[in-house]
Image (cartoon, rainbow, N blue to C red; front, side, top):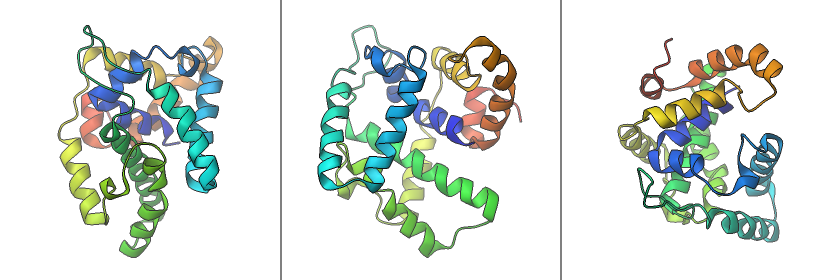
Length: 205
């Protein structure tokens, strides 16, 4: 249920947003290959969290080969590289925040020791790619400091906003599906967004 909000959070960082929107890797484009895009994403999550060292190295090689093709051009509004560990750190941080936030929404506050355990468990979502272990926050206070610092930097311009709205309204799906489920998914996604990003998306709540 929180997947759409997590995508928006990840792409609210301009370098990530334009990297995805302008990507020339058509095989991973959600509007051209939505099923493959979902399969690739879920496979990465599974391999990073549960895979053997050999499997992680193999998937890292495959993903890095695609990410190497994601680079900004002279016409790009922002500069970006798909292999930038700082951008990968932000994406992984969004995934961790999303899991923690969902647990708190449905079960109440997560005890600090459990939150720290969870943070260590999801570290491979970052370090399976180019992020170094020492870049991952060492504890929850460090993570919250990083999160608040990065959230304050986020801006969503009109181009990225329209791109993201198309995703959360399921415009990449067949028309009957997007018409029937798009409004529901937009509502759920809006509810899961942090207020600051909700305002950037101009989504009322």
